[in-house]
Length: 455
Image (tube, rainbow, N blue to C red; front, side):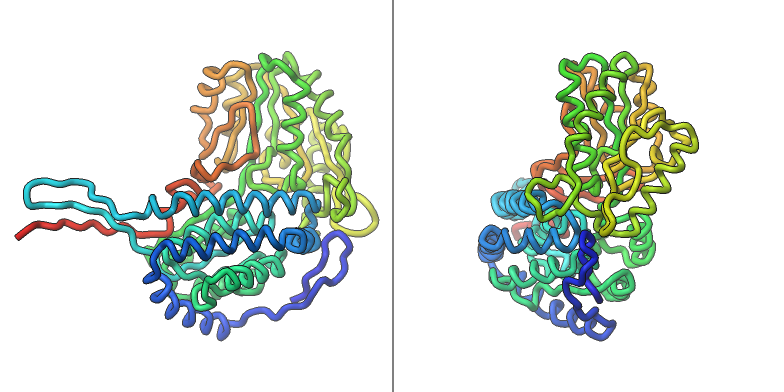
């Protein structure tokens, strides 16, 4: 399998894909190793993951450069991702043991009722390319702390990063018999579905997530799906500073080239301030700099998947043909590499692909609305349900709007952010289950209830 730099189109490295036989051998290896790993005191498992975090810090420059070369994000965003991953790891280090400790839930004369947690066993972690560190640690860190073994399949677009994650985990003390990296594309991922695993955890597209859920449904095992989004942002006319809101919305829309499941993908603005907001938003977009992602001043690197360029071009053409106005961008940037210009469309409506299909790129549509009711209707007009944002100076107004939006996360005066203290979960086509928070720790264990009666 050839690993290609999406910015330069140059070959980075060739790696050998796993076959059905090598996957089965890796599965047998971790199945045996999981028994020994779960018997370790949780404090020792925590110590290994703490050392892994330290190794991320020690090697962050090299790791960030590899990530930028593999998937095209600006180098400063790669460094930010590794720092963010370490903060999430620290959350699990600080809280997992407490969440998983046995609990006496009820006592009466001669009877104790207690709750304990056991690891699921051997699980598959099929991870994503857009944030391989952040998305990865959401799963494999709490899963390992809980006593599971993993077959970890990184995206084919970040294979070298995935292999490096495995090497650093082994160096940190996690045995190779507990964590194995599976290398390959979609066909290799399908091979994982044939194994008698104890759980599947996937981050990626709705279509692939649905296929995984369908394939393993009859086995009655846990499935965690972190899928896509078409995340809306609403700007009410009572905001105090339109320019600062516009700046926040631009960052939420274009950070990581819009290749985030929680990136802002459509914006609704109350009609009274719509012209002013569009002007401020466009001014901020013009500050973005497309170019070499290894350049510290670049804000927009290459798209990780070259095929996404034509997909975005199609969305833009569809919108313009149906009456949208293209204010900036709308096409490929440069002569080489998978670059796309930051793109802003106005005069959009929900008959256009750009307002209904997940873009996953630096393209955004801005639509004016008459009031909160129209905004709520349009924000809910989607198959997805990951996040929604409301900017308003009135907390009660914003909470009332967010309470009526069918998403797993609501933001007031912020957007495109994730906290390890809160569960990350989607509704509808945005997924099943939750990562992060105490719920994201308990996702990797099965409860056992004990009724203990004194003879």
